[in-house]
Image 1 (cartoon, rainbow, N blue to C red):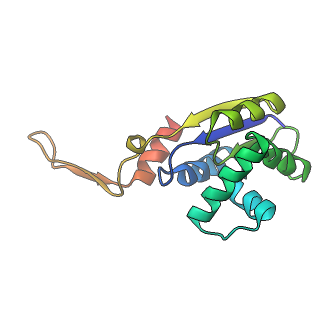
Image 2 (image 1 turned 60 degrees about the vertical axis):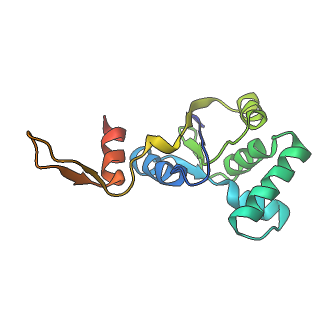
Length: 146
């Protein structure tokens, strides 16, 4: 495996959209913590229950459960030696430390609410332009290719 890309940021910031763009652009293999939490805890598949179950796993494992999740995905054999794994959410420092202890981290990306524009974003018209509108998806594509 070539390495792991870690994504972090608050709920609703666009981690999944950003992850999907990385998968599409670079062929990364997405490792989702949601399925792992559901498998390990049997909690309800809704945001609050998943968050609480993840917090419980953090307390029980010191954050190492996230590295276990990535290791399980790697062991599943879907990733070849040149594969890039993409973890959709590393929320706390102990999780990041556990991941760094086990894997080569290719990149760590923390998304903040103002990193993405609302959909659609319209620039106001001024003397030189008529104004323009574009989606955050097209803006994300430009960022990825730039």
